[in-house]
Amino acid sequence: MAEALEAMCGGSPGARVGDLAYHWFSATQPVDLDKAIDYSRQAAEAALAGLAPDEALRYYTQALQLHRQLPDPDPLLGVDLSIGLGTAQRQAGVGAYRETLLDAAHRAQALGGTDRLVAAALANSRGFFSTVGAADHERIALLEQSVRGVGDRPSPQRARLLALLAQELVPTGNLARRRKLSDEAVGIARGLDDPGALLDVLNLRSNALLGLDTLAERLAVTAEALPLAEHLRDPVGLYFAAIFRAFAAFDAGDRDELDRVADLAVRLADEVGQPTLRWVARWQLGLRSWLDGELDASEGHVTDAMSIGFESGQPDAVLVPGIQLMFLRWPQGRSDEIEPMLSQFLDDQVELPGLRAGLAMMYCENGRFEEARRVLDGEVAAEFARCKDDPYPLNTVVMWSHTVSDLDDVRAAEMLLPYLLPHTDEIGTASVITSGAAATAIGQLQSVLGHVSAADEAFSHGVEVCTRLRAPFPLALTHCAWARSLLRSDEPGDRTRALRNIDAARALAENHGLVAIERRIERML
Image (cartoon, rainbow, N blue to C red; front, side):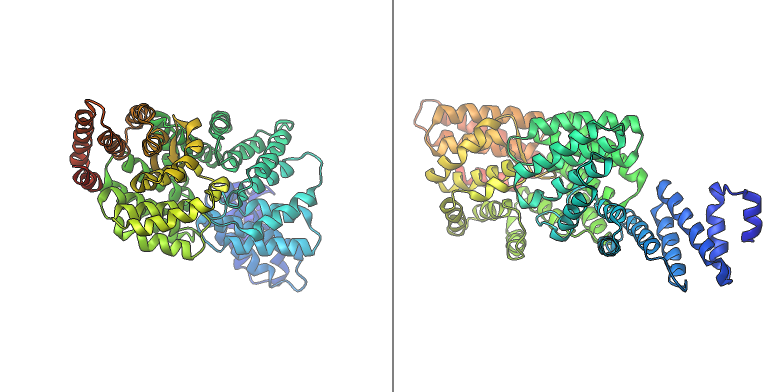
């Protein structure tokens, strides 16, 4: 059958390559093993190109099985097949891809195969850093070795390696080093006649630049990447261009742009079908339902994300939806359920500075002010040093502002206010969660410091920002914070203005089931 198919195809199997792979694999003559391996590999590569990773996984597994039967197997061919297998595993949502590709990289390195080391290092990425809240030092080391291996000559491989290394370093902080690596990667890519390499580098750069004072750059990068991806008609590249644009638009409080590009990303994730893409898309659906005040719908999306994450072996399958769940339980008035989860994350040494801010905030929500004070005092003593290397510093500082306001801590307010003042139009986010508008946090800190008119101005702007974001819970938090600030004042008319803000917050709470807001109102009244 295999020989007959070969005769029919005349050396160009095309769509029949799968049939050829099947029949040569099924043939029992050892003399034909090389041919069976070759056709299995061709079929696997065709399946990957056709966005059919499950088929590719089957063919690569088949090729490796045959390769092990050879009397004198070529070790470099074994590395090539393992790289293909790891790529197929990653796209199919098999968590073992990391170990498969690391093993292939180490074997390539031992054999002196620099090209294969580079290929394995580049394949070993899900499109963003390896895990939220922890650096993957083994991957980082291999990327650094690969960069040295390709040399200083500009090439698509060097550009991609530098860009991948820059964003892989996000959990370690050190924005200056990340920027330097990313700048070189973009410079190389712009000098090459390779738009695909430029798209990859731009997509990775939007993550590499996470930090304070970088939003304008990320907006510019994603604005360039999106039309380039559309021109290239690469659905996976376009997906990442859209999802990173959504993150930047969210930070900027641009709800219309967030919805536009997030809808595109969700559609592409469903069309391509790769579990990692679908996982991140469910984060986005959960986020936007949360913003809309549709808490039950948000919980459904978070549950879906947890399921996809576990099934596809995501290393942060618990952490990311767990943090989303914290922000879901908060407006529901169920923050007491979140304290143990946050404490466990901290015990596990998850490297996210925002976790401490979240725990202190939850303590305040639950009326456990002494515990919140202990957490806050530790950060004040360190002068909030963790915020300097935080990839999501604005979100962390906005969370701290809620605690600082609840505890009336003047020293902490003085330390945090400079972080926020340049960012009055931005939202405190960590890609798929938000602690509220920076303007609201500024108002809270100004109120603690006794700057009544500055607090008024900030709260007024916070209402505008949250209204544009169409986010009832952050808006209700702003009205509550403004009311509390006004109730501290002795100025004529402030009590009346406070009650108007309370009425606005109460209406939002009633319309969207915001139990936490109702409790805040009760305490203020």
